[in-house]
Image 1 (cartoon, rainbow, N blue to C red):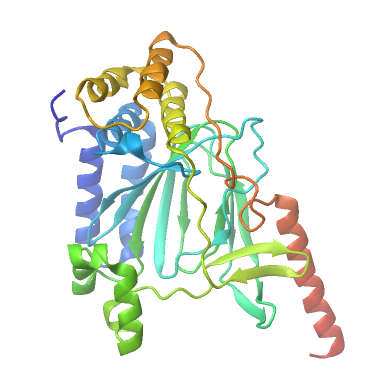
Image 2: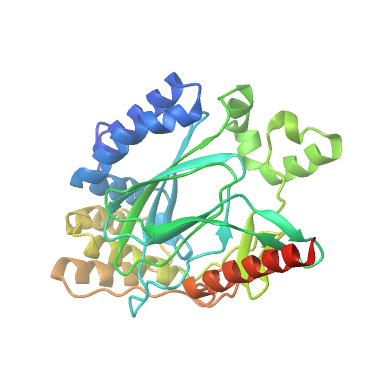
Length: 338
């Protein structure tokens, strides 16, 4: 199958977003100007088809290991980046469990739109304040929480912690990212292959010679938090999910195609099988492709360590208890005259 044309819905929307961010030096203005495009993406059923086709055409995609949320980075340029995230429900459709730690993205700002499905509950907090350095307890004051429903656009400003919960049914979101500061030569430099491929090493070197501010390279401090009975505990080092087996990734990708009604993409998968490409689980792909064509139910499952991690998988009630604990602590300090 020849390479698809680049005038598809995905590419057209991407070109419009990039032009908007080129024109607007103020990144907050750029995000506001991008909202009509994001709304159109949610309203255009062909956009999701185009996104999935782009994803399926990625070299080596069928040999990927399993991460809780499929998709990820689709575009990265000096002006913005674009992620598309596929949120797969738990087997029992439990929507009351968080998908990851409460986290913020430093000076990065985000506009996210739900383009498919009922969405998920989304919590946002005011910037964190350190309360107890020894115990790494922070105060996070709630800004709001609610359903990130289809067509909704949520904006997350710099240093604003937030956390998504599991969706009750398949949901797909597009995340438009940018720095909160105007685009400079640093943004172009960071997109060069040397910087992109060796970012972690460069950060260490830059820290030693004092160039992190000049190059605008992130130095990880406290970006992640989780609720405890004492308040919200910060994690100095980010803990990533352990990658699951390729088999679970393959099943999840077929589940996405089936649940989103994109069976029309079956020929693209068949082309991959017929191309002689190196595939770790060719038989599984062929079997699930048959299920997709025959409309037999395909199930997706989470890998061990994706839904049972204390710092990432907690409930709304845990957040409420942590919020209550920090409020009680502030009242006690006030009563003590501290």
